[in-house]
Structure formats: C-alpha cells, structure tokens
Length: 262
Image 1: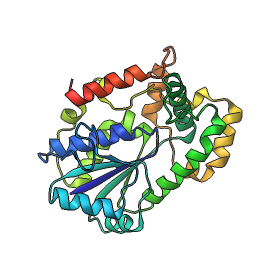
Image 2: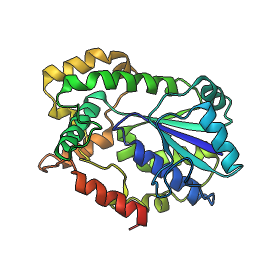
Image 3: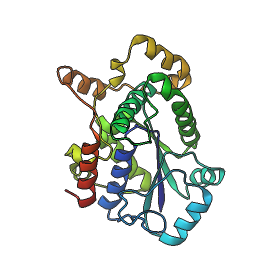
Image 4: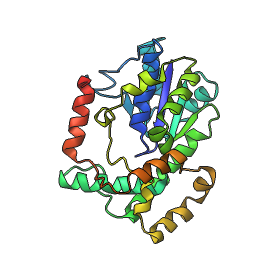
C-alpha cells in the first residue's frame, strides 16, 4: 500500500509523517525507506517536492505490494487525485493556522540567514510570507477536497496525537496500541523539524497583522476551527514559560537522533 502524507509547510507535517509510519509498524506492517535512485541512501524520509504520476509508477514498480509512506509539500496531479479518490492509494493532509505558519517561517528565515542557508532566508517580515502561503493553501485545498483524504490540523497532531493515531489506524484498517506508538515520541528530540512547540502561537502577532491574515484567508478560517480545547490548555500552561525556536545545531541533533534511533 502507498500512503501519501501531504503537509502544508510548518504544519507538523514531519510529525504526522512519522506517526503514520509508526502506525504501520505497530500494526505489524514494516514500511520501506527508499534509497537510490529515489533518495539518498541515508535519507530520513521518503520526501519528494511533488509526487506525480511518473514518480508514483516508478515507486510502485520498485516496492511492489509492500507498504510505504511518502511525504510531500506539493500538489496532487490529476492522476494522483483519481488514485486517491478511488482509494487505490491513501492520503492525509495537514493544515495550520496561516498566522502561525508565517511566524514559524520567519523563525526559519532568521536561522537560515545566520547559517547562510538559502532556503527560507527570504522570510523576514509577515508580508514576505504571503506568496508562499497562498501557494501552500492552494495545495492544501487540492488535497483536502479529495473526499477520502484524512485532514488533520496542527493542534490535533501536536495536542491530540492519540486521536490522530487512532484515525490513521482506522484509515489503513489496522488495530494498534496507541500508547506504544506515542511512546516513540515522548522525547521532542524524536520529532523531526521540531522548533518552538508553542500552542496558539498566533497570539504573538499584532492585532493589525492578524487582521491581514483573517481577511486574506477568510474561507479557510470559516472552514476550520484551528483552536482546540487541548491547545488552549497547553497554551495556559505555557504562559510563564519562555519558548525559543530551535537553532540550526538543534535541528542537526534532532536529525542525528532520528537517524540512529537515539
């Protein structure tokens, strides 16, 4: 079975991808990790910018009937839409409040400029994020409107992980020990791309800037209630805490731990 885990940038998409793989494993179905010629031999994820028909056909021929989870930030092509709609392959999509995505992108931009990295270095102010967000919201809508796709919000993924695990298990037709799957992520160092971990982070944004997002993405806010009771509870516990975004070194350490299962 091929399972595609689409995620909007900065929407806990890596965490969702990791949980999806762990659900397969916990149900007794080991998932494959692609190497050459698809990915580097030491790749941590089966990530592709876009999963198109040609790539999918090559992967299908390569893996046969085995289970594999693919991660992407890209849109679904027409053929992919049909395959998912007909449930020949399964898929999920993750979404986050665009205000929070923008703040996380700006954090990443600051880190990128410090380390002289090109990706994300262009994000300095809120206004810098709009073009990329417009694109990502469009990609998300393309996935989310395919009826069988399971949609998860950032707050569900991070603060109701057990519910997400149960939903994925039901989607693939498996029964798993939810606590066993969750135990893999007790340490935040096991979660790829973990940065700040602040609940309801949009509260850091000025009312003026928030208004720009609420107007620009009004249909998205009308469709999704991004705040959840569990996220509000976590936010209340974090009130007196100073949370800083992880730096480049911290990201390298997290990836090291993931690679060697530490």
